[in-house]
Image 1 (tube, rainbow, N blue to C red):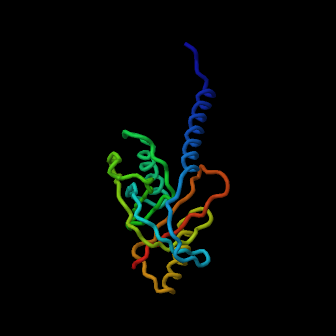
Image 2 (image 1 turned 180 degrees about the vertical axis):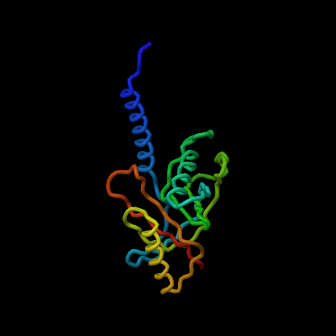
Image 3 (image 1 turned 30 degrees about the vertical axis):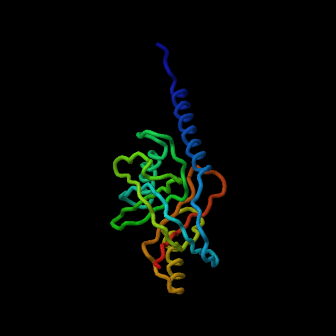
Length: 197
């Protein structure tokens, strides 16, 4: 019986990992963002009007990084038709993360333009829902995502809203546009604050 060298085994594992990374990169490179109307632009801040958006949702406990990683994996598995019937679904950016308190986060993937009723019900800890049509105040977050950076930009956006007597309709959400697998200059992530009225 012939022996298999560890070098060949490791080379095979590396090839499979590289192919998986390339696949996810391709999916994210071809992803689209939902259309919106810019109601106001002032420096780094915009107020946008989004239509109702179907979403795939999971709630995850843990730190921001941990909840985002676990949630992304659960939602991506559904999008890529792992464990369900039907075709893969295209990824739509951004991925949204909303703090729930008590070290928990709600992670959302925006679904493509498809009727939610046409989709197979997701599995454990994943639901299909809809974000209502809403106006959102947005500020860009340049640089590597960190709790400190997101907090600083959230404070800046909330101060801007207070000065203009605009009222938030919910907590600040993080909007992620980049993958660690994506080469080149990253697109800025964003802070979203839904607005009342």
